[in-house]
Image (cartoon, rainbow over all chains, first blue to last red; front, side, top):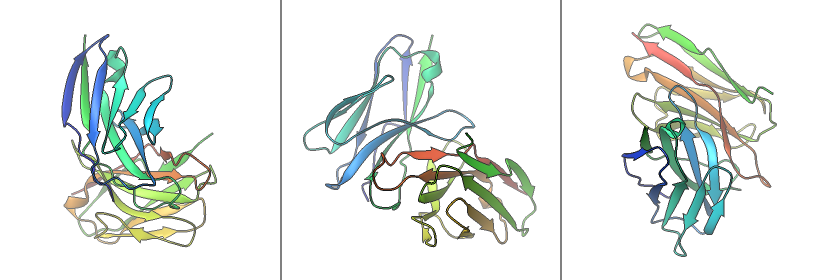
Length: 112
Length: 114
């Protein structure tokens, strides 16, 4: 299982771009990288997923270098409502529900 | 469109009591998971069920048992609750082959053991 390492916390201001990096040195060939967002008293929810290079959706971008040993979640122009904990999860998509282990997550605080 | 439903949402137990947390999903997902989250901490996997009829241990299975009753339901049982099991419990489900592998979470069950 690929272990992930993220910064424990980050601070930002409204309107700034935030980049959160996750390290996953022993990622396997068939592993994908998925990011989740969690607000207090709620379950995590899916943000974005990728395998290599760059993926972009309506809320974030995900950058994955060629060696895939790290990934960076980019949140453009954050607002106060982006204050949450962000988790990087590495695992195979089609392993029929194998272990999915979360890391400690990054607590993002957005200030006005 | 319920998604993943957990019951109860809140429960207070005394040390040594038993209880079962229920989880049901209506998305026809193959895999289901139970996580616990302690205050200020990340999620830790307790047990998971890759498909109906199978269950496997996660990171912290001691003190818990699970049952995959059918494809929809996955229950978590505490046979003799301990204060260390005070936590928020999250159930999640995931579709199988041909999908993104996204986890869908319930709203959580907050358990306090006195």
